[in-house]
Amino acid sequence: MKSKAILSTGVVILTLILADSSLAQSAKGGTQSAAPSQNVAKKSDAAPAPAEGSAAPASDTAPARVAPVLPADYVIGADDVLDVNVWKEPDLTRKVTVRPDGMITLPVIGDVQAAGKAPKQLQDELKEKLKAYVSTPDVTVIVDGVRSVKFNIVGDGIAKPGTYTLSPPMTVLDAIALAGGLKDFAKKTKIYVLRVGADGTSTKIPFNYKEVTKGEKLTQNIEIKSRDTIVVP
Image 1 (spheres, rainbow, N blue to C red):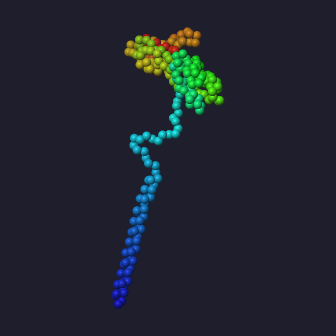
Image 2: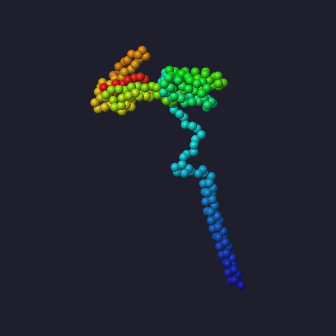
């Protein structure tokens, strides 16, 4: 009877040990299976990445436009492109080109003389004219394209002689490069700039291409002004 009791007790103990082991493994497996669900939740919270080759989301802020850098005494001329902006009045806002007669045409006020005036001067004049139609007009005039300022480059020694639009700041070397460079037989030491003064008289300014390209006497490489003529023999 005693041996049977001992055997029965041993079976009970073994059963309890196996049960505890099974419960531990189940708990461990449950922990491991829960982890992926957390990862899935984190992935679902993240914003989806854009597909390769697709455009990035558009920004609400428009890119700033850079206007040409002009000298303080710049005067509007024929062929210049002007941005005339009237704040909160899109129907009155226009981009216009100055006609050969120097005029521009705008809504409501019609033809206005633009050539021969500084941008600020034209801006103030438009503001006054618009007061008859807008209570407090806020007007800005920006020279968006400089096309009236030109220079000439002539002579047998230049590749592409002609009249070119001047985009300041531009030097004699810049002008020569714009016109295709010098021909092989060009007289590089005899180049000069003809500059017309306010009184109508011309001044001859020498330019030695060989010296300047060697880094010598760089003061000869002057900035080109409107109506200058570069002569390349």
